[in-house]
Image 1 (cartoon, rainbow, N blue to C red):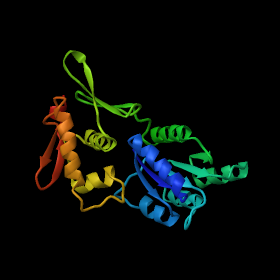
Image 2: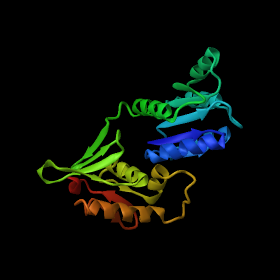
Image 3: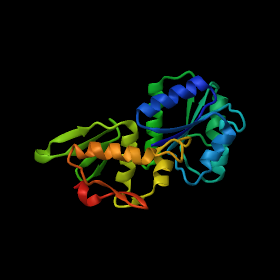
Image 4: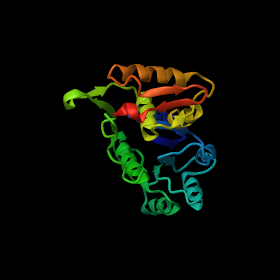
Length: 233
């Protein structure tokens, strides 16, 4: 799940990004409403949920919502604000926000609301993604492989490895380019010319090989990478 976080309070924004990243979300965090619109208006990046502070430099959270809805963009929006009057809540919801969370708030409640909006965004996405003998569990953020005698073994993946494997499992047998993986699995500020994708692919393959999935991911030289459906069963 990829989230756009727009929060101009550095301490709060950093805390939210750090906590969500630990739960294997990809989080793009920006501090300015105008910059946030550039992210939202980028057709190469698809978000599952946007978390918008109300009061921002440049465009406000309300204005961002209005722009999204004017473009018929149904991206779920969670509004964060210290404004707690009924009139303020009505204003935010009328602007197009799907949910409203008043500061200060607990991180557990924020995550629960994100999960609810994520299910809505992905049309009640199932709690698990199954591909052959691989099972990705969203509730526990774990991946397991079923081996002989119906025994399941958990594969210990980092947050980035989990996100990378999830993207491949959603696109079996498709050649995915390095740029596609960078756009969908890494935060937008990641260095576009680094070797992070091949390095992460090597680590992921090494872990999968330990659990009998040696040939699951292949390099298509000159093009990108592919998850072989035939080797996932």
